[in-house]
Image (tube, rainbow, N blue to C red):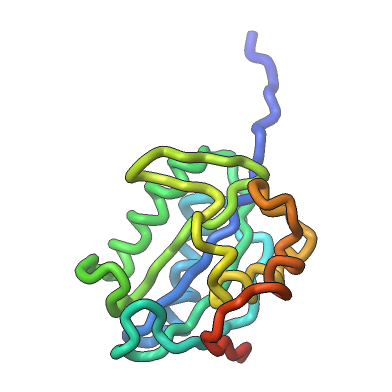
Length: 168
């Protein structure tokens, strides 16, 4: 006899970005693949354009935050996000170089995960980067950062990052 067990779901918050090709179409396709492979995309932010960060001699990035309801673990989400990047043509060369698509897992429910050289959640630098925090604050303003204990909106309002982030 089988018992009906309810699946346990978590909300994964991901930041999508890219600065090559048709940036908007690449983000849209990434969202379709997230829906197919990881779980239901329950909300997506507006599109945000920013100058390149880290390595600045390249085209501007288009970024978007999404929340995905998933029954997968954070590691499974990461592995599938990397597969989606490959499917969309991502080639990893320079750490902060040009890319068709980048998918970063920035929050996973209220979990704190530290697997050296593999996965850190919350993303260890998210609170310092406006291009992460502004789209995330749009879709999850009241979510608490599990390490800092502050809401995403509060962190976003107090961020000290000179990079201009333009909501489209």
